[in-house]
Image 1 (cartoon, one colour):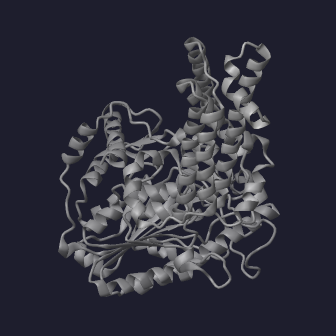
Image 2 (cartoon, rainbow, N blue to C red):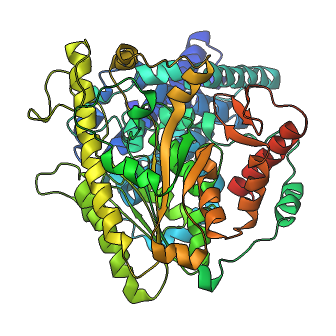
Length: 621
């Protein structure tokens, strides 16, 4: 008997040997085989997490610098291998079960990133039918690495079935181990994989910063591999249904409101622009402007409906305001599939529905989300707004392009709806040099050098936006077509670490105080209409529009146009009559103007009913 035959005989028959040493060696070899297999699975997951992007090998190599990252990507495969072994009492079942899950998931993630620039999240598992319908739209490129992985997987299953025969003779021992491993899985998921602080600490961007971006959802995911971020995403995979939720009841509530079409003779074009970090600091009455950066905006407010949004965010989180406006939801959720929005409603009314953002299409996953929201076209840096020097587009050319899209639509004979998002005034703003050495926007009132520079650099951008707004409005003022323009800010700007510039200005950001709460969350909005739009709708489009959450801004536009809106908007109008500010911090404002953290009576019931309807619209509509 040669060495190969002796080894094979040992692996197949060691369990039945009467010699304790042989039995221990036999079990040790089988256990080690599963451990080695699991390590290989983790490495496969890491490889395919990195292989779908440019410079993937550099990313793959960077994982090895973090023992924690490696362990958290290997451990799930190890636990799965042993769990399947305990369940079926066959080592090869451990290899097969763990391989199908880890390798299968890794390949799905790999192709999803390659085809859609979007990683596999746990929330995607509920969209199997949608994914199946979409596969016909893509051509899958079968790489050598994919073929080799599948061949090795099949070979490993066959090899383990032939050579690794360890089996438990006692059922209670197997069941006991299975329960113990399942308990370990539960604790690890809850205490380790769901730990946000740990997840943040294991960000692996710095070593790959030359080709990964901290602001990309995709890059934040793949910098941690595949298995670890996928399991972390389970935490936010599904929005919990509100207490008392019943889909049939929410549907009946929605249907209790009659959905209205927009009358053909009252249709007007709409251009909505959300402006990055835009706020009117003259509201505070604390700055001495030497050059007024709001000169045209203040003139525009005087001939428009204007007021303030009470947002959910401060100095970041742009998409919350953006998506609350277009969905009518009180604050942003995770979006992974088609949902009804005001964009899709406008499309159903015969409108061309477009939008644009001069940033990258992967930023906040806009490339996919805007399609799920119902936009016919949505343009990005990659396909429309790339500049000659590679910088992100300023507001002036961006607004000019919105006008170009608006004018191009005339040949279709369809009314036009555009919702676009600027980038120009995105922070941070330099604290050690001035962007415009010739112009001072804010007089120095004893500010620190850093605060003085940050303020003047911020208002340099605001002045540029003011000029872009003027060109947009004056071009449309005498347009023969009826058009409405909606302008609003997404959040307050970042003004130094710890918001120290606000402190030097004397602006309170204490959210425990009513004025501090509004200072923290408020941004301006303007609803302007040219004379043609006023004539068509019969609205005056002037005066104080009040303040409210971003989810109610479209309601105000429809009201001034004399449009009834769809059933959801009418339900939203009902909520607003009770509660017009719903802040995700847990603060509400009732119809009496009172800020509270505890709604009562009818206001509470209306809010609960609406939150159930929101959940229905997002998940069961």
